[in-house]
Image 1 (cartoon, helix red, strand yellow):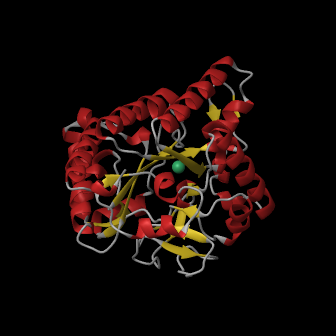
Image 2: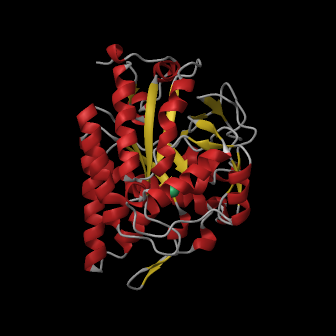
Image 3: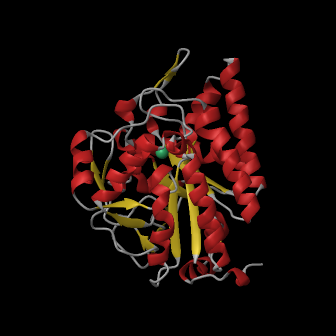
Length: 349
Ligand SMILES: [Zn+2]
């Protein structure tokens, strides 16, 4: 089994962005230590438009230093064998800095931009990231899961060598002013090809979907989340120091009262579901288990849970690998065959 622990590497978006130390640098260095100890490789989807904005403002010394610190960390990630791929949050494009960041949240959805603008956004972002990582960027995760309608992104991806997406999760659905996605018709598979619609399998499609693994979540889980956070605030406090985009009231009520589906995540208390979900998943014929996380949402509890998950599953012969390691250029049939077959640790060089 290939296990991909993937992180969206970014600041917070709910008013206060938080600091790069607490939202990105410190938790990521902790993850690197953990990965090194267990010979695991992770994938980081980097919010490139934020980096480009930092560079644009590098006439301000503190922001120039922040850019250099992030660049250094990304280089260290590559050096340690981790993967760095593309994540886009378009509310950075028109953001301004006046001692703090003023985000352009009305433009949170990439679909607010025209097809021509998106082509330019993707092209400059891929180039910017490749200049730092010195390796091919070909995989994407949509900011806020905003992938649909895909026809607005398709041409830009084809033009700039992005052919793998890892955004969809089975039965995922949200409809708020900022988050708008509907994956309820997603195939219940772990890998497929598509062309115009990421939810529609096309055997000869130009794009590959490596979906985030989904799990059924009972209302009890959300009640427990609230309860444990109140009972053990220190253990469950997340490291990120900004404010987070909150679920709206209707959505919270829905989660607390009815069963739902969520991404498998190593964030905060959600990490408690890692091992039980993996156990059920490993009894299926699927070969790719994709976990999503955010450095800013790491807690003492979630770091412990991730470590025991890695320790226990590595012992069973599963490997913690990156998207680049399995699918990296050149794009070959061999890579896709490898991704389609369960992998034993003993097969690894
Ligand atoms: Zn994001």
